[in-house]
Image (tube, rainbow, N blue to C red; front, side, top):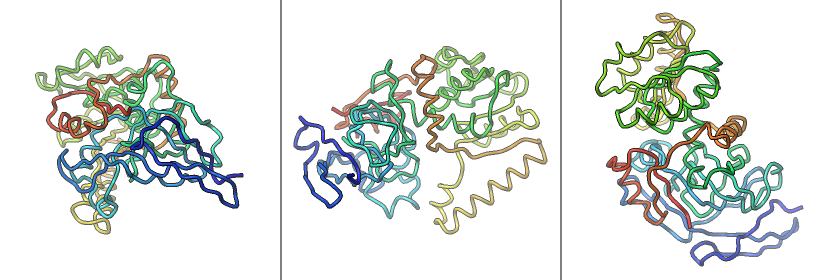
Length: 370
């Protein structure tokens, strides 16, 4: 048995991959050794991103898959990492490949992979701390980070979903354990995570209220929110009625935290995407920053548990095969979709990042990989 099984896709350009045939005492393997990728050699603006044609492809571990990339979406984490967010973790590991979302085809599978086969269309997302991302012709993901691509969607449409939806899934389904008939407040429903949260909560039978900008009102209502409140023109304290079982705060500002906490029922869950772990680690270093963040989180959890009777969480995306499979089923059924506002070829990645930095494109931006 080979250590892992790999298929090198034929008909690629020289920039796409180089081939090496190797024989070992365990078997014969055909290996794509290098490929094109967008590399981050140093932190900075979009101009630091480099398209390189000779980036090494590591060997697959037993439960990993090599995915031929067709489309990757740009997440806020990508632009923040490019600018230096998470520096304490990532700076010693430069150069990096950015990117978390992916849609493409399985090009090779590790020896222990049983859920997928070569040639199958898949979509998925890497963990936030992954060093080798998806801005490349070939990406490596573990078995639990992938699911079959919804057949009703294009690669562009599918690539916009996994990271945002898994972030919302972890908050609402894993942490808050929302159930039919509950009320959910999504603060910042116009972004990808907010839109995914609305749809996941609606699919679970919850009643959803969201706050968003005026340009996102119609989109939020169209995906199932029963009320969408324009935070730029309305008094949220007056416009939001009743109390909620769960609040997902995608903004994480002090005022949105106060708002969310005060609208929760006793026993409810407040979850923010803006945890302080990475920021404190960047400021004080890993050895001091992570304990400081842990202390702050514990202090807030104890404080709000006693003062309001609620649970307080910093929430992050994590790989969840059960969640991703449910996200696939909802997407296939037309119950979960993240609209894509603009696409760029991966060779124009600097322009794509500039568009996000300058907010020239309010919604999802996707890089297409030819």
